[in-house]
Length: 530
Image 1: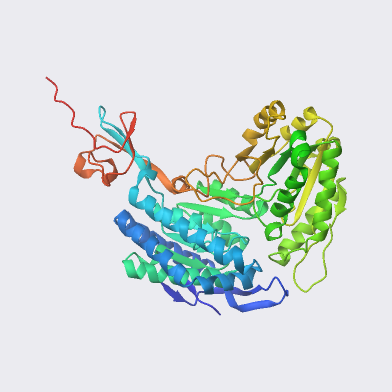
Image 2: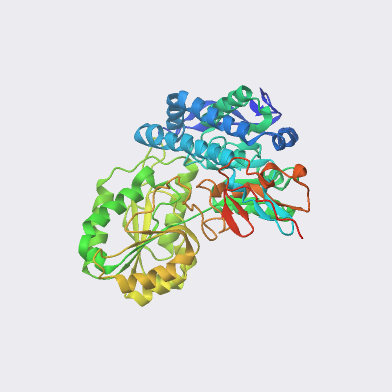
């Protein structure tokens, strides 16, 4: 049985069970056995994380940045093995998906986090020289990161954006691997430990458990030694963790479910229906639809162009070979939720059935429902069928389309396609106004799949897309602010202040709000009273 990474060393934990990953392409057990950790393992990890946090509070931001830079280098040096292992455990394509897209994104966001740790503007230092009151964001404490199954590298618990943001903010990370890809996560943790040792950071800055019981998971996120938790996964499990964390007053940041509505206005379909259909099919079926930004809901106004669009999509869905789903659990949930939509009244245009093995496969599925039916049961028709599936809502006119939008839950994204020469401009204004507060990211003439790693990105949104609409899990430095607590210093002398709040700018590049003005300058000496 594989060891866990606790307190800076690989060791046999106190397991209460074992598991193995499953090959999605064959349905057969894959790789070595991994432990289901007991609460004793969690306790040991939390004690070590507390010790690491004490040291990190005294560690320079430059040293933390050096760890992240070195970790990125070590990942690149082992990229072939990491990507190949992830391919075996998830069936996601080795090229271009894992090796040429997701892995470069992973090291890129780690390096962005390192640069933000060096530059320090993320902490939002605020200085009132007249009253001598100063405040900033400081590391909140040990962070538990629970990664998803669909992005084993870029969202991995020991490699992804949550991990990088937490460490860059000065927080040790206790990573809880996803059981679909434990070996991939172990490879990352091996490189993280080596990088920690090379730069001299506390060895418990990164720890790894593979699996815990549901009860211990809830106990973990509620433990007073945990500064915060970052979770990406199903809504049901996430809400159970949130209830436990909220009851204990512990912060938890969730990415849960999103059907990412796409609105196709009539002028856009008259102008370029075939092009839009091609883009939609590519987005919906990419990675077998296993993206948190997969377009799971399409809104159209009825007419010849809308009907032709639907028929074109059906033909392309039937012609495209279905991909492989990540796990048996994903297959079961997809089948169950598609049937729920059908039983509620959705019409099956294609698919809606499991495919014979080996492995986990589901027919490319397109469903259709009239807006009148949707409005009678909007919550049911917003059931997330995670995978290669989407639901088209056919509206009679713009007013009915706006009524449908008015029933939508929170989503990560919302897309609007409009005529490029302005024919839809009036309708666009109304649709965008109605849709804007319901989505974290609004796209124009673009499908939602894919999340650029840029400081301007918001990969968040209203519930149930996330647990809090104020935060993003992608985009440095904004993602780091989740792992900071606001600390204020009132009438504290210069030599007792943290570097970020002293008169002299510690990096020369750090942006600070000084007397109501954002600046990179030092605090100017105040003239003496006469």
